[in-house]
Length: 342
Ligand SMILES: [Zn+2]
Ligand SMILES: [Zn+2]
Image (tube, rainbow, N blue to C red; front, top):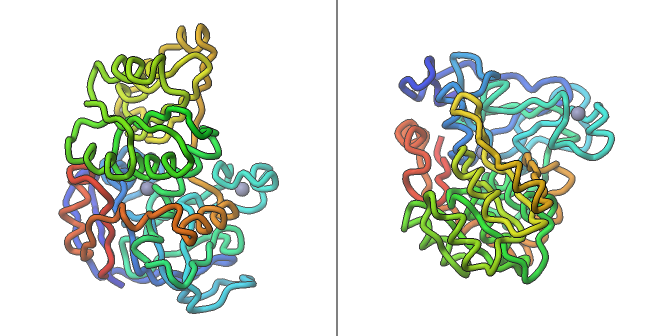
């Protein structure tokens, strides 16, 4: 099969012919129709994730069709159109038993703990726990974003951030997950402040319904406190950087909720969270890590009803060859880029 491979961290990415994987016991082999390029893929390529072993094939935001069933899989058939959360849960641990598959203690992740979906074929573990059936009308390129950024944003805003209509929600960083969060929060009735350094990203945020935009940088938190009349009720760090994490906490009003969405690899430095504000203002500091497969029908229902429009976030479709150039530049162009030709 063809796959996008790198042999050293930060080194060249090239499309190669590699041996295809077999469907694992209890899992499936998926023929990839679309795979998004996400900042997490960039982190994997940079060597920020200790799970990644070289040589490596990145990619974890996928949609496609089941190509083969592993031993013991019931309820799925070859040809079924599917997507999958980037956390492949085990289905057997205490977290999974509680329904919290997104923090499974025995999870695997395509594109991190094994080769990923920037390839013609990819494996999914524990198929009965992790596969999500795609509605007929949903394009593969749109569905791919649901596997990571859009679902992550949905859970962060609705389930973890618990935003209520009329509340102010600040989004620090308007890349793929940040713009998804803007769209989800607006649909939930929140008043959204979008923060980014890029005027083009802020234009997109405005187009998705952000009521206010703020130039990223040292003064962003103060600007948010000013324009929301005391601070946001909910604030997301959708970048995953020391500065945006701290800025997000500082932009909250008393009893506000900070939701950490962007990855914060320690290799890039740990954030200085102002814990004196956490105590003085009774802030909540929350993490949000993807979304369990069983939570997808609610999200897919809102997409089908036209309440959410993830397809508007897909601004570019690429070939696998083009991904070799685009992955190192993730974040340079606003919106979501998806590989649709393998
Ligand atoms: Zn588990
Ligand atoms: Zn991702």
